[in-house]
Image (cartoon, rainbow, N blue to C red; front, top):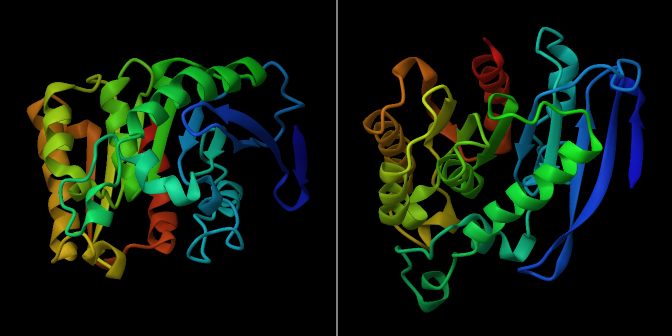
Length: 276
């Protein structure tokens, strides 16, 4: 285990590597501990699990060159309840496969039509390996109400899926720029038949200019597709009995598919999900 003292922010980050059996590889997870974690040795903390761990802490590591700015955000907003943040690295070249519980149903070429399908294995690994490891090695509040999950794009699909598949585990979800168009029929069918706990909270954010050249390889008019994905998910939550006050939907004019905007809305996500 590697520990890094983040002196500028009075935080500490620990690094671990856990075995992923379905890919036969070690995966890095990083644990951002709250201020005074060691000093307050009596305290326990909520835990936020985040996908695409390479993109959330440091811009130099991020795929886009811009991170979620998690560390400065936590430093700036001292009013937030203290929590532990776990960044789970993605599988890089297998990212689309791992974050998609179902094979894509919108492929336009043989290459794109055969993508996805490992997301259920990933969800099981997070629930049965990552979370128990964190709960056993850190002073967590392991119950559903204090376990959060968040991700963007394909990370949004796997977040929504895991929330539905494990409602007894994950209490609050952050679904940013949901890319469920990747397998929309299977996604909605699953969500419509797997209700969340009614006390859970779900934060949904999407921009009106989310489409890019990569997405166009799968389907046209991706700007509208991203908006529709979030609306359909919102409707599914209502259909399955989620109270309106426990859902927050943000459709943001002219925002694109980028960490810059997810970082901007991360604050509101925490404000919404962490408040009593």
